[in-house]
Image (tube, rainbow, N blue to C red; front, side, top):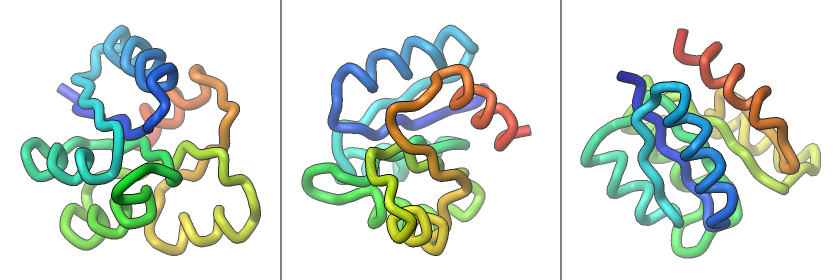
Amino acid sequence: MNRILIVDDEPNILLSLEFLFKKEGFQVLIARDGEEALELIEQSTPKVVILDIMMPKVDGYEVCQHLKKNHEEVKVIFLTAKSKEQDIEKGKNIGADLYLTKPFSTKNLLNQVKALIN
């Protein structure tokens, strides 16, 4: 089963994405900040991490760096409100496989995730 970790501090985004991916047959893990995400990654490594950048405790950039250093096989998708060119460049430079900005299309996100894991 494809395991996905969704990391965001906005409850509405977590709920809607959890519902969407469970409906598609994914095993969904949820983290509300980067610290919680790092713990979950070590407990059960997901195939894909959907990651916000601006979060309390540990930000998305740090989580991405940890993943790319310790779990290269995990795909990282930034899903963030940070849409400046320098933010996108930074995200890609530290190893993000995809950088999507909010607001976003859930259908597009789902298709992108499927494309990354196949």
